[in-house]
Amino acid sequence: MVCPAVLLHCFIWISLMATGVQDDVTHIIGSMCVVQQSTVLIPCKYIHPQHEQLSSVEWLHEKSPEEEVRVSQDPAFEGRVEFVQSDARNCSLILRDVRKSDAGIFRLVHNTASGQIRMNAQGIRLDVTDAEVEVQTESDNVTEGDWILFICGSCIPSMTATYIWRKDGRLHSRHHGENLLYLESVGLEDRGRYLCTISGHEGLNSTSVDITVRPVYPPKNVSVSVSPSGVIVEGDSVTLNCISDSNPPAEISWIKGGMILQSGDTYSITNIKSEASGNYYCSARNKHRSLNSSAVTVNVMYPPKSVSVSVSPSGVIVEGDSVTLNCISDSNPPALNFSWFKENETSAVGSGQSFSISSFNSSFSGRFYCEAQNKHGSQRSASVSLTVKDPPKSVSVSVSPSGVIVEGDSVTLNCISDSNPPALNFSWFKENETSAVGSGQSFSISSFNSSFSGRFYCEAQNKYGSRRSVSLFVSATVAGGQNTGVYAAAGIGAALIGICIIAVVITILRKRVTPSEERNHRGSRHHKTVESPEDAYMTLDPKSRCSEYDTLDNMKRSCDTDNPEDQDTTYYNMDK
Image 1 (cartoon, helix red, strand yellow):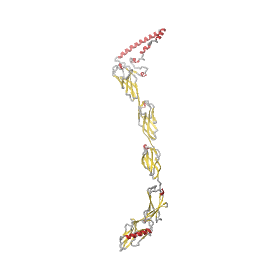
Image 2 (cartoon, rainbow, N blue to C red):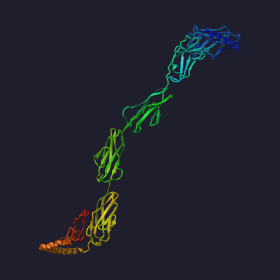
Image 3 (cartoon, one colour):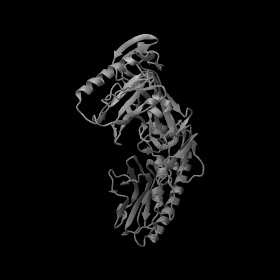
Image 4 (cartoon, helix red, strand yellow):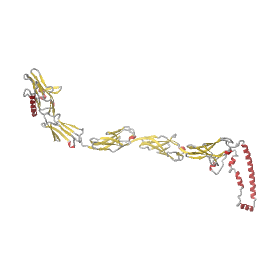
């Protein structure tokens, strides 16, 4: 196009008239931007003394520092360049049908007849632009509210131009002297195909750019997936993924039990423990809103652990109580198989989560433990000790020395009992005395004599009850008393024979009583009680006076009494 070149030519003449520089080459401006396929005037002027003749004038084109050609000799410029030399001071160059390859530095050089070379080393830079559109956006995916910058061409022509912007083939806007189109906050209506043209150069090819504007919206369809999706066993690695649909993309947070765990689309747990079981959910948030997913349950399976035994009742176990042992375990799934063992026994003594003994006694005492099992493994508990508590039983008295006791001997009675806990309180009693005669597990008489003779028993007591022993008869004899006892026994035997003879005579006489005497006798019974001859001898019946006979016999025997306690009494004869 020649019109801009003419204007530039006028500018050159004005500058030439204003300059006073001698013997110099000047390009007036340092750079130019030219529209592709247009015609451009590259301005130039030179000044030299009147007496000096020019031998040659030449334009050089530098495409790169390593490549410089003479314009008049380069085939690429053939037919497209014209050297303007209206007078000796104008050295401008006209370049038609400008191409991209014409970009570079142009310099004028002239030689004088004296052999001197004149040139401007800086030259003038020529940039070539077209109507291609370059786009810069706020983000890779343009969304509502983003900004977009369109750039038409690589530079703005030195001669002011008007840029025409079109969207979908329709005029969008015009910009004079500015090759930029800026959309500050795009909306869905800004979607479409954009291109630009330069006024006066509508024939230039222009690239178009398609703009897609994604609508903005808050998160929706937020959900969590778990990997692996099957059964989770303690020690596995588990990954939770948060899935959401939003624009702009949402920021993700992971939450369990009201506590934020971490941020990011995924949440991973390596070597998972049972403590990680629970409900997890993710929260998706962008600038419009936040939305939580539904909770997913992470259920970690593990074998029994923390297995223990509880005892009911939890206090003291007394003989006869019902006792129940319960096996407590922590496992997932819950243990269904329980076995009960007693230490030092080879096989299980029971099964089930509870093990009961309906009437506990000392034979059950020992250490018990349980074993809990599910499909992932088993574990046994620590042992618990069960001991029965009972009142004293099998209470008895032993005497020391165990042989014949002679007056003056030291005698010790010991109270023996079986109880748990052991009896600590012992009391000693002598029959027919109202109060205890002693206390402590042993009762001693330092110098035994006949006044101490009698039936002794003890009572043992612990916190669960008391029990008395059977009576033990203890007596002493005087030294040498063995012969005296024999004589006394013989005399008593003779007396008994005589009594038996008298009894026979009385019986015969009773048979001779007349009927009238019998009636008189019966009548007299209404006024006076007559002692039966048989009653008179009952005092000698060994069964009724066994204790007296025991002191005379050189043996020990039992005495039958109406008292059940007395029936168990053991008597000792201490005669020498």
